[in-house]
Image (cartoon, rainbow, N blue to C red):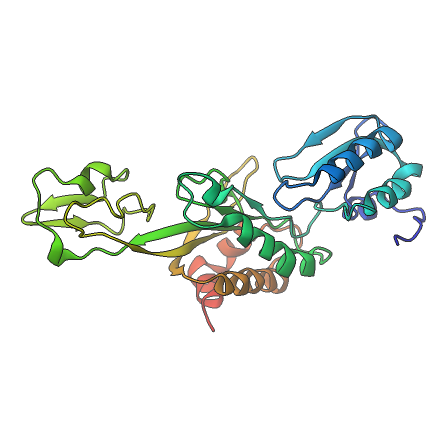
Length: 294
């Protein structure tokens, strides 16, 4: 059970997931979800809690959390107890690790990997472990199921992009003047030059669109994996995340990398400094070397 609230200052309330509404004496509660997925009974519980303790208004956030508006200070503890019976909790604000944001992955025709399963595991193994740990600033993790990047991983501290790296068998390439691979490549990374298809790996996004599209079976399969970007940041002055020089082929590697990045940030980040600024100050190559070391 949740202990009864004593008089908390605004910082403590924010750490609990409650933000003061400007020009009012009420708060907005930030309810954690895993990828915005809730059961029907959890939906009902949140709706009833909004009526009982708030002003009846519910809002979805860009981080897949549920915001319940207009909760008076004296009702905060009762609100938390009420939603607790459906295994719901508040949080996800302040200088902490935020809940993982993911696209629908293989539920989409372009999805390369099961991003929902991966995000569930990151939530269980990483988020739940570090959710109450104070960091220098907020820390976001997002997963994109393909290079379309619907979740905008380039603006997150850690961005994970699913990959399907084509296995090109040059011996089977006929150098067709009308090449099906060249036609279908959305990045213009594939060109028939001379007698063979040439694939520019510096341009290829590993979207997998070319796999199984060659009439002569030059590309019949590929290798699934994840490309990881670090140091993205939104805000007035945006910073684009940069890719680590490795494609990860197992989920365990992803779990280890996220935890290593968090620990590095906790040790090296300065107060109120975003991870992007920490990387800029120390140097991307040095940070990359540390994160990729074993």
